[in-house]
Image: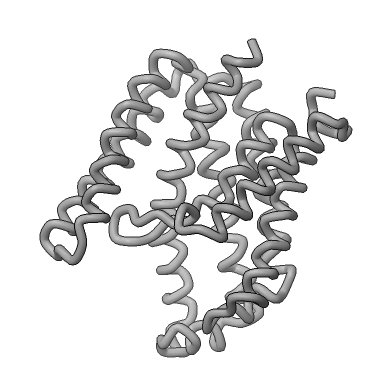
Length: 250
């Protein structure tokens, strides 16, 4: 079934492979990439790819694996804020929802069509380019390591390449991938931070050395600084991977 409501052997295999990729990303530096002034996680990207390619059930189950691994990490390699991820409402629920929100956003956009929104696509790519240029400038002015400069420069080149390729290969359908990817990424970032705010606001802020009286401001700030680079990385990877997979299916 194309809508992903039934599991078969192929979908179970896809769940296993994408879930394993999420785990590997979380266990290695590959899962966290310096971009702009912050570091972006890409552990949620297999969830989005699974949802777009195979439906909400596959996406949700890959998200479940991602969430369970977050609990495992919190137990085996604790940090000062790991206690928040011991709560499944923080670590698991938002990750399952990634697969659901990104899939239905993808389906909705596929039905609506985007022939009149090419300008929005170019605007998104331009905004990504501006953010990465800002990261390059910041890295040069406040130089501490060559790695962020190389990463931001590489991502800037890759962004330009992806903008060109998506405009040529996907044309007016590129937003079908970009918007769901942004929604899936924000589901992860906003979902996790919202649950942290509801259940652990003051304790979390205190654990990262901030004033507990500014808990809301601190958590919102984390969401903004993490959400932007995570969306950038996700857009680049998801559009390239899904485009390649769709070509192989034809």
